[in-house]
Image (cartoon, rainbow, N blue to C red; front, side, top):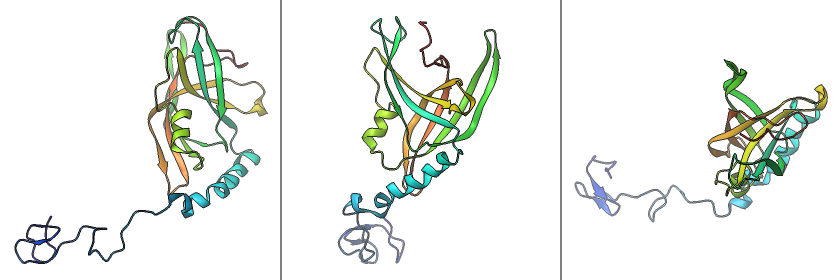
Length: 204
């Protein structure tokens, strides 16, 4: 630790060169008032969570979020992921509908089997009222026990009839952006989309 008076070194109890007292932020003797938040549940950010969600719901009500976002879990009949047939055991919609922002974007890549989509998007404005534990479950921050498999699914709403479903996996760790009243998550495009009617892709 360096002394602000002479530039010498010292400890929290004092400078070894000039004898000035040194204080760590938040330690006894520090007059800045630095301290942890006594009760985060009573903070302004927490109290405004429901209001923020109500305002963001207007984007959906006005038709400005023309898609829906789901957290989907499969269970495979063969005892391991990719073996046997998959069946959907849970499907949870993220509400109010988050905002999909292109980062590197999703683009078509021509392969021998046809056009394959590759790239990533960022999911923003995920409700700040989700707890960290809930977010970890919804976005699979913890690995699922075999033979279960989780992914995020984005589908256009019913204005265009029955549309394609696009499957993503989570890249990195969900981030709580308290300043923005949101969680942020990066999604990576994945193959094996469900059919338009919601049936899983076949066995590999």
